[in-house]
Length: 537
Ligand SMILES: [Zn+2]
Image 1 (cartoon, rainbow, N blue to C red):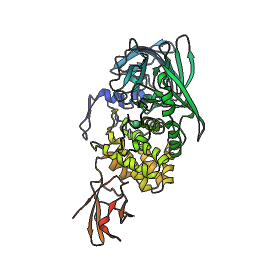
Image 2: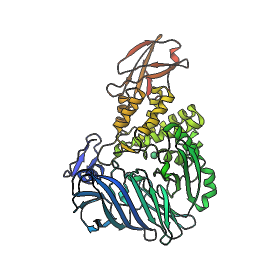
Image 3: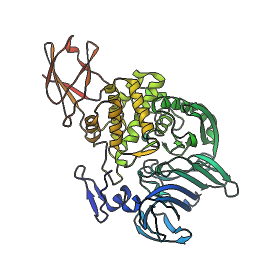
Image 4: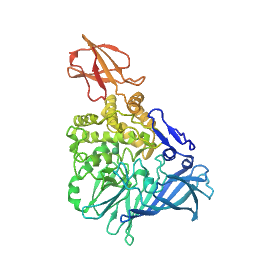
C-alpha cells in the first residue's frame, strides 16, 4: 500500500493526467495518521428522517480497536451537515474541523488493544442527490400515490454525505446496526436483517452481521410491500426478499424471476453468495439502482435491458433486467471483494460488467455470452487509463466497465480451459472473502491461479489506453507478424483462423515469420481477443 500523505501540501498534481488535487482530496482519499491508528469494529447509526423538512438528525456510535497510540481521531462528515457534539464515556470532546474532516481530540488514554467507543451527534439538511446514483446524496421523491419515497446513494461522493464515519474504503466495519425513524405509515429498508420495529416511534432496526463498505450502507423509505422466496443455494437456504412499492407488487412478482436465475448463474461461476447470514434483498428506489450490500436497490422500471436499452447492440441485453443482474453481481465484486482505493474501481466494475455475459453464458451458452461482451466494445472510449490516481479518492476511466470486461474475456481465451477459469473466479471470492484489496493482489492471484504471467496484459489494458495492434503480412505460404502499440515486454498468444480453422501464434514486438497451411488470404483474428489488427503490404 502506497502511503504518501503530505497534509501541509495544498496542491498535489499528477503529471500524467494534469489533474489537480486539493488538501481535502488527500484528507478524504488517503489513510491519514488520524485514521490508521484505529480499526473499525462496530457502528450503530441511529437517525431520524424528516422528508417534509428534508432534514435528518441522530448519532453514530463508533466502536474501534486501538492499533497504536494516538489521541486524535479523524471522522468525516460533509456540510451542510454539522456535528453537534462528540462524546467518549459520556464526556464531551473538542473537535477541530478542516472541511469534511473532523479531528476529535480524545481525552482518555488510547491503549493498544483496547476497544473504545465515541458517539457522534449530528444533524442538518443532507446534500440532495442531483442525478442519483452518480451524483448522489438524498433522493427526496414521492411515489405516484403521493407518499414519500426516500433513498440514499453515495458511491464516490462518500457515505459522509449523510452520516459521520471513517470515510475511506480500506477499513470496513465488522458489523453494524442501522436504526431509522421513518414517517408514520412508511417503512425503512436498510442492509442486513430487520431485527425489530419500535411501533411507537416507527423506527426500523436493521442489523448487518458481516463486514460492510461505507457506500453500501443505505436508507430506503417508502410505502413498501414485501414478498420473498427461499433459495436452495451452495451454502444452504438463502432468504431472498423483495420490497417494492405497493402498486408494483404483481408486476414485481413476475419481473423479479430474474433474481433466482441470477443467483444460480453467479453461484456457479463466482462461488456462494457472500452474505447468507444477512439475506439477499432487492429494494425498489426512485433512481436507477446501486449495489448496496444485501439490499441491492432497484429502479429499472420493470424493464428488460438498461431502462429498455441493450448496451451490447446484439439483442442479448434485452434477455435480462440489467439492474438485477449487474447490481447483484456486485455482491461478489464490490461487496465481498472491495477496493481499498477507488483508483482500483475496476475490481468492482470490470468483473461486474463481465458478470452480465457470465449470466448469459450460464443460461444461453458460450456463443451468446461472447456475442454480448464483444458487442459492448462499442462503449469503449480509451480516453484515459482504467486505473486512476491513488490516495485522492479519484476513479479512472469509465472503460473500467466494458474494456475491463473484454480484458477478462480475453484472459479467458488465454487460460483456454473454462473450468480452470471458473476456479480462478471462484478462487478470487474465497481468497479475498470479505476483504478490501489492491489491484496488485487481484492481478497476482489471477496470474498465479491461471499459471500464466499476465502482468503485461494487466499493464497494457489497465494502465494505458493502447489497444494491441496485430500487424501481419502475407508472403506466399508464410505470414510475418508482430504486435505494435504495446507496453514493453507485452507478449500475448493470439488465436487466428485460416480457412475457419483455429491456430495460435505468439506475437511480440518483433517481426516473426511462420509458414502456415491453408489459404492465407482467409486469415482472421479470433474475435474473442480484444486486439486490433491490420494487414500491411
Ligand atoms: Zn456497477
